[in-house]
Image (cartoon, rainbow, N blue to C red; front, side, top):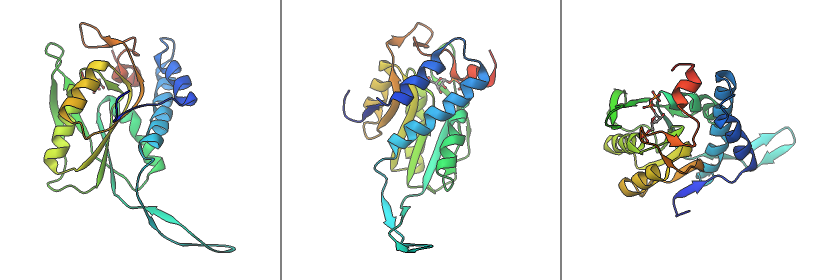
Length: 209
Ligand code: PRP
């Protein structure tokens, strides 16, 4: 895989992705597994975060200690990205959460923005975009455009399953944004669904559709 595209090879991710894909996984289990894989992928995506030293006093004496240097923003793309937030947030409780609302027009497959409350100035140094599916890449590209216009300088994308088309679109539009993915599937079908994928990540999480 090319530079900037990280596809997890972790056995736990592979095991859990299998559960996620399974047509017999119900929506309670699906939400739980989305949460777990999101934590595992974010662990990989945050491996090179910078630290500042912060010595700590233990009951036995002084120890070296560290704190994260950057303020982190979690940017879930509504609605399917919502299920990726909570687990990641528990690992990084100091993170801010900035929601971006996009849906795909069913005919054109182009993203349509319907919610964005980013403040005027960036408040974080690193943005992690969270969205289970990278299909045509339209939503990821549009979200990255928005974040860059906002003034975000460091952005990473965390996604569960990607199509080659989506990876190409993101690498072309935003080669500076590394992608951290659970799996790369074969292709998109004629209505823009990832095959074999897992179906509609929004509907399966929220019990709709
Ligand atoms: C899905 C998915 C991504 C997007 C990916 O959302 O959650 O956001 O499609 O497709 P793309 O790469 O072609 O842009 P959808 O539009 O179905 O909305 P939902 O999350 O509200 O269900």
